[in-house]
Length: 116
Image 1 (cartoon, one colour):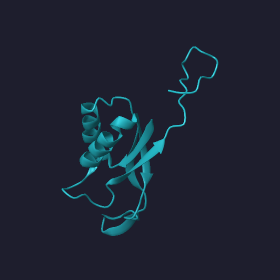
Image 2: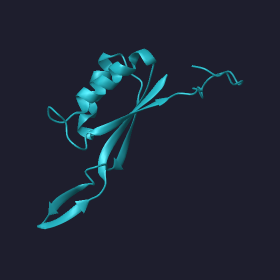
Image 3: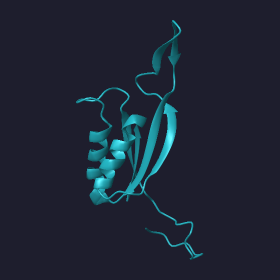
Image 4: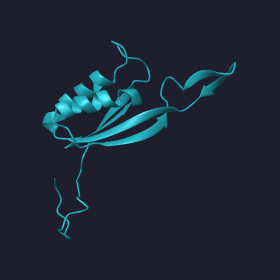
């Protein structure tokens, strides 16, 4: 098992979610986030004054997938999160992390049983 953590632009969330549903990936966690990468924020104009916005709004999508789904999930997120045909700085990042163990909080068994 792997955890895929995708940091994407908020405007791309519905496209990414629809693409993942087509792959039968229904379970995901979605969180709002603020941050910046290489673009170092944005400059904006308000009433004639220029100011810098250091933290940009992003969305974090976390998905747990089996190894055989991993490449399909990454491909779907990558295709749907791009802005324009080639993408731009600020489109996001995808991190893939190994899962050591999963424990179901609502499980009726009090003893610890490692594994998925």
